[in-house]
Length: 244
Ligand SMILES: [Zn+2]
Image (cartoon, rainbow, N blue to C red; front, top):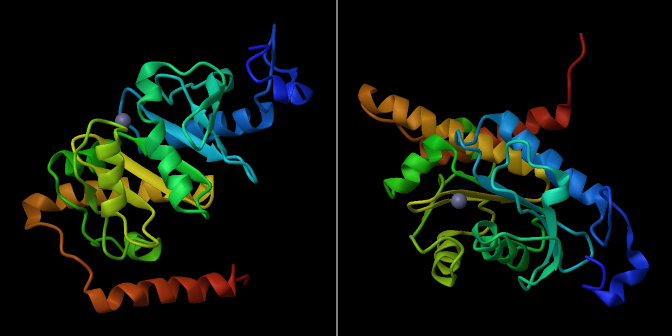
């Protein structure tokens, strides 16, 4: 990697065995850890396909998983990418390179977003394949920024300008997740913890929706009560843990 970015030579440091690089090992470790937690959450397809990115605070850059699967993703395969899509350090295979734009677009559009997750979590992807939004039929959706449910972005080849335009059209202010038609799910949030949480909530709601199908179909929470669910959660949150 030596010589790729001479202006950053001062920040070079020894990283993985046998080399010098300008990838910050702590951030790369963080991204690999997030990938591991996404897998542990269960909101992931059997092959582990997906990608995770983390905004670099104070810089127009992100760290991004360049490995083929989030399962066992090594920190050494995390790459540094500019928010203009330029690869700044590391090796980015074509399969992962093709979806960089849907991550960078979320950081560019939403200054508060710090982490973006993309998976093919199976139940959410079933809705994405059916072009069916997930309705607000679980309380967790109302509590975590999805009181209108999870919208569907129209199909475009993965990571293409058409796909990114579809994502932008589908998102309304404050919404932290979108289904990608014929593809999977994209979650973007302030922190990795919140992104992983919302990824799990979306998958749980999708599974509940499909399981409720033979029982007459899921029933959405009445719109007037969705804010009440959030208010009640916030009231309890303010009180904190109660001790006997
Ligand atoms: Zn994908």
